[in-house]
Length: 334
Image (cartoon, rainbow, N blue to C red):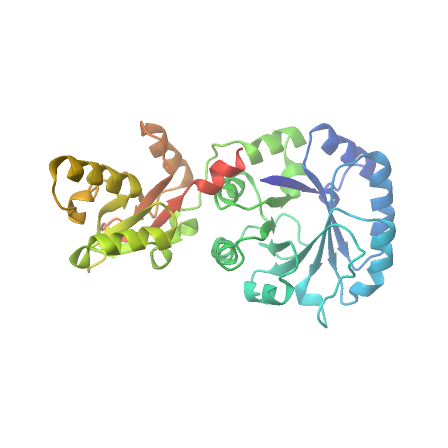
């Protein structure tokens, strides 16, 4: 996940000193907020003379067209307009370069992106736009998951409340870029903050239940109705390489993975027996509780003597709650 440094969050140093510091610490992008102020482009021109870091421009205005000539003169790498301030459908001329994004605040449904499917990414505002130092609203974990499901080919950017603990969760969810401002500049140093934002292990006070794939979106077969076809179809449709098995009360009975099916198939070929899906169930899988913190999750993974790609999640009564999938986190570290 790339870190986009919100340059105006540094309230103390001159802009050039801030930019030089961020460049020296190899930040990925420079996030520039434009609250309907064309003078921001003077700063963009200066930044271009100081460094070649990608510029991530977020414009809040009800008149996007007044910025088009400025964007042609001072092109940026990432261009985002705030959806809620638009008074009509946004049409960005094709000759304006850079990747295009739509920013939405927490209450706005991700369905508004339907009208902007030619854009490259969404920017989810996880706190109130323009207010530095806000707290990440955990409902945005759900929005991120919903957007990925509806628009799997589009990138997700997040702005607001991104500290070390939130950064870890966002990386795990496959977020492409996160904006960080107050957290970067209030730390002992930019380098110290960047290290926290990108390191693999971090303490968290968020719970697993806040960002897991919920049970209603998980591949599940019922123990009472299980057969080989239902198992294979559920794994195929779920596209995770395994499925949960639960009884009609919702209690987790175990999991069946593609590897479990392969082992059962090899065994049946050797012994000339029919495949019985109930014999494939791993009845004691490593699992998480929905009230575990991220640090507890990491401690559990460390104890495993095998690679962990996913974990079922249950509540303290043993009811299946969801799944934690680590595929996006692994991809993000490549």
